[in-house]
Image (cartoon, rainbow, N blue to C red; front, side, top):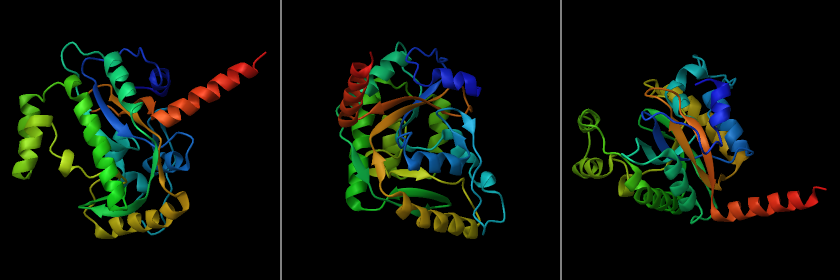
Length: 264
């Protein structure tokens, strides 16, 4: 998908997505926030405009940062709430959009304290307090239940491939029921900052860089969610629609009304 096409699709409720497209409900920082600018630059891509960006280069890295972020770059700067899924027969992208919009209007905005951490061989941001972790888990669980009727079951080959991974019995149960093993009590909110890195020094360098940046950026502003789309298998995800939570949706409506009233 070219930048021009992605720009046309972003915000276009009638975008004609392919039947092969996958949809995902993600947390994405507000576009005007420093968190959005910083995260997109780090990964080297803005999934809303679908343009490449110049990434910073921590001085202690031997390899270019761009080489260490290939995997998360395809998905865009986000934290997963509902993992990617194909639509069930008879479900349209527009129905999916309306369902997620309605869900978002039931939610309230909040700030999430975050920290950089190493999760296995990955570097990521995560909630820094138990309360924040619980809040994000509840948000994701509510979204998963709401969107469940829209989701097509995993194809047999995809299900078998996921079962081949090292999973606990409970995770296998969740995979069979929900198409993904890391949901509900197994869910851990995170925003991925790297590909899988075997070199511990690289992981430490990236973690140290973000440990310095997080206090400067402040809390993550959770003001809404976003519907991302993978247009075709293996294609980069694009941010299709932002879904403001109730308080922010009302504020946006008031601002728009005020702006309209000021026009001659």
